[in-house]
Length: 101
Image (cartoon, rainbow, N blue to C red; front, side, top):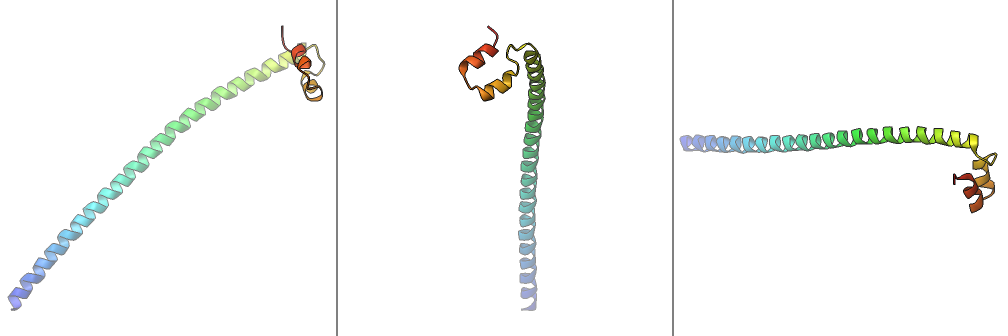
C-alpha cells in the first residue's frame, strides 16, 4: 500500500508541475502580448507627437507671416486704427474700406 501511495503522490506532483508550467507559460505569453501592445501604442503616440510638432511649426510660421502682413497693412491702412474701428464700428463698409480693392 505504501508503494502505491508513493506512486500516486509522484503522479500528482508531476501533474501539478505540468499544470504550473503551463500556467507560467500562459502568464509569460500574456505579459509579452501586453508589452507588445504597449510598445505599439507608444510607437503610435510618438508618430502622432512628431506629426503634431510639425503642424505646430507650420502654424507658428504662418502666424509670424500673418503678423508681419498685418503690421505692414496697419502702416498703410487708410483708417488710422483699422483694427480698433472694427470693434467700435461693426459696419461692413468699415471692413470694406480697409481691404484692398
